[in-house]
Image (cartoon, rainbow, N blue to C red; front, side, top):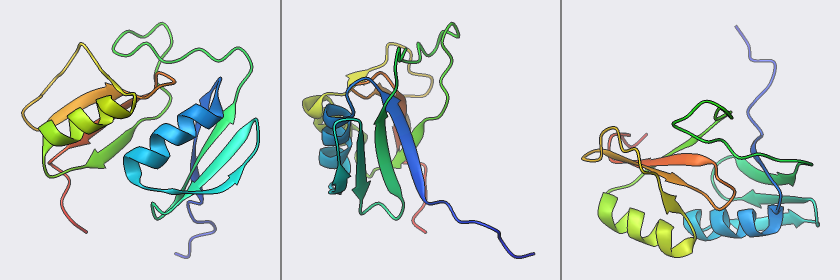
Length: 124
């Protein structure tokens, strides 16, 4: 079977796309491809990561389900402690709930999106 499309970007909603993009740019060492007041596109991760303004945005309240998470990113790291420390320095917040902190950590980006850092993802 032939694919009819390819994954072009992952978009993260928020109320301040510029600061959200700055966080992900610095965390993953990406480049700004396009920026406006309401939308920023970052390149360099094999797929574009975009941030966009959404009116009345409400961040997920994971692990609660009042406002469920819509998507989250899994980031492969080699040193959980060092990666967590750097992410927090850049503006991430460590989640109170940590289901398996020996092999992965749950953090929230500045807009409240949960994301994980883990040593469990093999090199491809």
